[in-house]
Every structure is written in structure tokens, then in C-alpha cells.
Length: 116
Length: 108
Image (cartoon, each protein chain N blue to C red):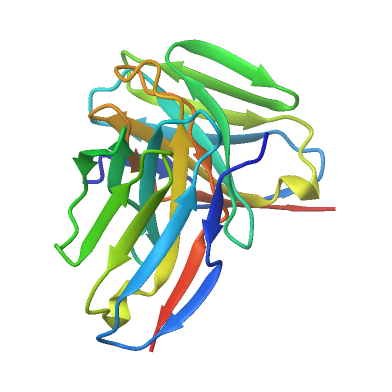
């Protein structure tokens, strides 16, 4: 079974531009979560989607948005990019059979975004 | 105060040594994740545990829910174990809160 894939793997943008990142979960997984990792802040939760609905959202400005499609693939969008948005963006998928306990999350390789 | 704290932040060891990484958390949880991140960024989920102990090869994870504390042990450490180890707790179903990570370097 193929793992979580993310595209693109690397991206360079300039301030003010927008960017869309894509995540394809493991087949059968219905939950997709997005995380941002920076040297200063570490790993931070962005948002989580389940069955095309955003269930949880982290403390990020409205410039960060996402969506999930009927095939569970997810995209996240960052508008009006700032230098501080330079980071590794990771997505993770899980089956979500038991949402109270939490399940093992399977991470993609990440998209490394550099904003100049 | 961080909701999830790890210690130590950095750890160096000689090959073969026994390694212990600690994680303490203040949020109420029912399970805890241990993750491994290699240079380059890829993250692998090592364990998810809600009680007691789990073992996978040379890795052992324990958790004490009452004391809100978990430990990750590596027996007979090897240079390929060099990575950042991160603990994370779920908050609101699958929203994960992460520790700051422990950078482990194992020298031959």
C-alpha cells in the first residue's frame, strides 16, 4: 500500500504570493491533518479534515486554509505569503475509526517552502 | 509553560548505550505518540500508547497516565538511531500537540 504523498516536495515563492500544497493520504484513510514545522516553533498543528469537513483548527491566521476532496485528498493554501511562512509543511493521514482515543498517524515526506 | 515537555533536548551516546528520553505533559489525554524524525524531515510514527508498555525491536515506550509521564528507551543504541525523537499528545480527537523534540546522536 502506497504511503502518504505530498506535492510538491520543494517550493520557492516570494512575499505576497500564494501557494497550494497537496496531500494524498494512504488509501482508505479518511482523516488528513496538516502541520507546520519551523526551527523556532517546532511542529504545530494547522488543521484536520475528515470526510471533507474541517474538524479542528490550530492557531494560525486566516491566510492559511485547506480543503478535503471526496477521495480524501487534501490541499492547503497560504495566501499573501510572509517570510515567516518558510517552513516544512507536513500532512498525516489516519483511519479515524476511533476518534476519542486517537490513532496512529502516517506522515508524508513534507513540502519544504521557502519564501523570499 | 509548554503543555508537552521533553528532556533532554540533546543527547549524545556511544554505540551500544542504553538511551532514555522523557516526556511530561499537562493536558488531559488518553494516548500519547512517539515519533522519529530523520534529517531531511521524514517523520515515522514509532508508538501510540495509552497505558503500560509497548516494545518494538530495540525500542520500548512506557506511559504513566496518572503521573502524565512517558519514556522512550532505546537498548543497544546504534548510529542509525540518530534522529530527533518527538512525543505528541492528542487534543480534541486528532489535533496533536508536540514536544520540542530530543536530538539524539549515537557515535560508533
